[in-house]
Figure 1 (tube, rainbow, N blue to C red):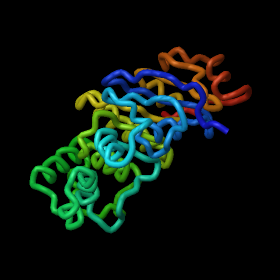
Figure 2: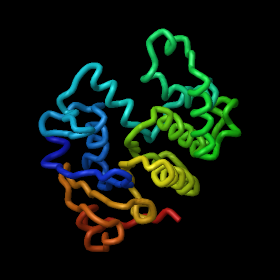
Figure 3: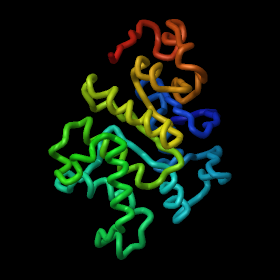
Figure 4: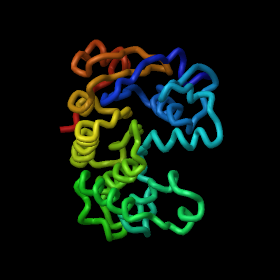
Length: 238
């Protein structure tokens, strides 16, 4: 069974593109193909003028330096400090010996603090990651991804593990990253109320195929039913 079938689209620089669809529609697979956490069995993924669907070895590591990733689970090291967790985003760009010893440069540390400030959590830099709330941990994960200096940021259900009251805070910071740093964002989301507020464009997947590509504000009741099925009800995050 193919997870994605005939999926073809362009992502414009500076876009905040959101992918929607039911669980199992192929959203996560799509993101993971872009940064080669999944290997596509056919087709092309053009990034930076290269077909990254065909690269291997060190070329994949180079790709992942340019493609930041934020997961539903924050993937922080609980006993390490917030600053230490953010600095982990630099490991892929360091030589083996300094990376093993955690020998980060002063510029690395300055950049880490800058990104913690961007997501409003620089005052927590010295405390352990496991002392933070879920929303704060996700903001640390955003700062960690930014230390890679990515050209594009992939966010796989970044607010799915958070309380509704915290969702907007995390999404506000992703919007800030998009608008102030000009970083392209491709994000999987469930809630259309969030999609309408933050997305500049939406792609809807159904059984691995694109069934909608356009403005979030043009998804009316008929489109909602087509994407999510007859009888589905929209849940709002206020």
